[in-house]
Amino acid sequence: MSTHTPVVLAVANQKGGVAKTTTVASIGAALAELGQRVLLVDLDPQACLTFSLGIDPEDLDVSVHQVLTAGLAATEVIIETEEGVDVLPATIELARAEADLLTRTGREHVIKSVLEQLAEDLADDEDGPYDWVLLDCPPSLGVLTVAALTAADGVLIPLQCETLSHRGVGQLLDTVHDVRRFTNRGLEVWGVLPTLYDGRTNHARTVLETISDTYDLEVVEPPIPKTIKFAEAPAAGRSILATSRSSKGAKAYREVAANLVARAARPKPRRSAKKKRA
Ligand code: ADP
Ligand code: MG
Image (cartoon, rainbow, N blue to C red):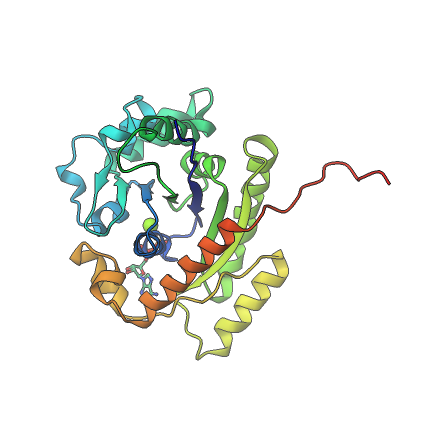
């Protein structure tokens, strides 16, 4: 039995409208173009990711909600999409998950154990195991986001470079530190991804520099330009990589995806709990 484990990347920021979902859909499509086998997980009850992949959440009988709260196998729910990625879809039912999980023992580990079970179930699958799992987090630091961070190897923080955007980053990093302490020592911050970026303004660049300096965060390159093309993609049920193949935005996401593949291949920094004795 093969024991190939996917790279699990949480895309998180408790602020809404910073392009988390767009980033998950676009990087997912770009990774698929690179020949990677990709699963996207919709963890937002608004189900925007599910919808943007051409699936109407209202047509679904089961979703990630039953997988997380009722033990339904992920393989029973995962849908293949035209985008070349698979999705574990959400519906509005997921709005109940926070409350349903709140009193459960081990709730922080619920996504991690779902992914472990899935890897086992797919070990003999003809399509093989996933190379990447991207977790589209909801706009909060609640149970689902903490469970996503607990399941993740890395967290990518999409950030709209505007004046007050750094206030949320501190809170998110506090949560990351708690997750590292209590539920997932291996979690790494892969960095901030500048989104809705207007490089023509000095302002955007200054905000970005301030944030990466203040929090000592890597900036994942290149920034994703603000372009109207992104508004058209979700309604088409395809990502911008399909609807606008050679646009600046599609190119930027392809470059980011290639950089993430390189990052995943990088050996992990050695974490020395104790100082080495000479
Ligand atoms: P989040 O998941 O963080 O709430 P979304 O991915 O849903 O954010 O994006 C919020 C809105 O911004 C959507 O309408 C989306 O189409 C739009 N958007 C995302 N990225 C860009 C971009 N680079 N340029 C222009 N609009 C964008
Ligand atoms: Mg979203």
